Amino acid sequence: MKNSFENRTGTTCSQSGTYMCKLHPAIDEVVIKGNHFPRCRQGAGHDTNWILMG
Image 1 (spheres, rainbow, N blue to C red):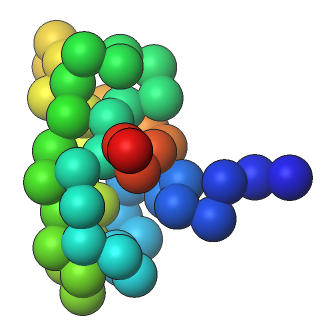
Image 2 (image 1 turned 90 degrees about the vertical axis):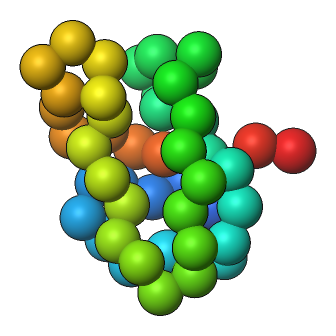
């Protein structure tokens, strides 16, 4: 089953926290509830799945 706190770029965040890029775990972003998940900033940037850390 998919982690309920794994979200795709562009979707609305339902739980504030620090999320890591599924493809580049060293890249993390603080995303606030109600905001949209960003693109990963690795290289030229790309859409990704963000996974809640902790």
